[in-house]
Image (cartoon, rainbow, N blue to C red; front, side):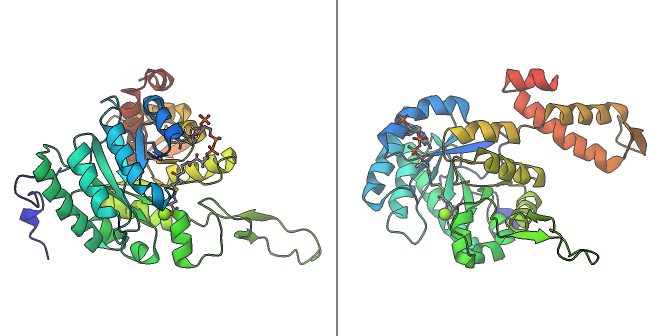
Length: 348
Ligand SMILES: CC(C)(COP(=O)(O)OP(=O)(O)OC[C@H]1O[C@@H](n2cnc3c(N)ncnc32)[C@H](O)[C@@H]1OP(=O)(O)O)[C@@H](O)C(=O)NCCC(=O)NCCSC(=O)C[C@H](O)C(=O)O
Ligand SMILES: [Mg+2]
């Protein structure tokens, strides 16, 4: 049990007070780069102008002999990046030999530049409690005046079983992403991919009794549907933000767009981009369609108080569709405030 009156008190003397609400700044794409890769790092200042979030990755994808270079690269980029950019980091997992130094360097050497620390392979609220206290101690030592938030990656079966407790473990929680590659391995799924569908995971029509030999229609299904839907509920119920995650087949831009769109429609606010080509896909998918926004505005204008039943363009609208329209227009407004092109497209 935790005393609810203590929930918004800092976990270390001198650390900043926890936030009541997760900041609502756009995070449609969290763009991953390896800070130890000079070619990639050189592109970050430019990419930071296009991507909502840039993330210096210290975990998987960075070879063991470059972990220290990646950590040093993160600190250097943090301290030279344009202050208008939003910078996150993904540290190594909590059982690794690198994580203590990762978190210490991120908070003490770049804590005023890094908004969110992504924790991989979170299995339960105990992982969040550990990182929560450690970050508070380091924030106090660094004299920070705003808290660094935690983003958990859901990538083990145990983490999945505890997703609601992870989401509600601390006011420091910002959001949760799906880690489909590690989760597939943990669940013993028989795949060798990073996210997306699989040609073998499908449904097929029943045979036609009048013509049993006729070809039967069949369609691929989304193996991440249950996981994403449960994650979205856990996040939304606790006031934090849900994200899809990585799509590893960089050349399959259509598959990437379809996976991102499925996540967007289910309630995710953003995704990861692993390659510059995925930034534009994420921007397109996670910014609502102008026609949908126009219809949502029409519903709100036609039902100013959100009450009663109405027919608009041949479709029944009531209190519940009015609320959906509010979700759409609120998102469009928050994006339009920062993006003149979208403001024009939405007429806002
Ligand atoms: C996937 C990549 C290895 C592909 O890299 P590459 O083969 O070099 O692609 P290109 O030749 O098309 O690159 C063109 C130029 O763009 C630069 N580049 C590539 N990716 C990035 C990037 N992410 N940020 C900045 N710049 C980038 C290249 O350097 C080329 O530059 P130039 O030669 O000067 O023209 C590569 O994209 C990559 O490594 N991406 C990041 C991968 C990553 O972060 N992986 C970890 C996250 S996914 C994960 O962890 C799984 C998850 O946890 C789970 O469990 O599911
Ligand atoms: Mg992973």
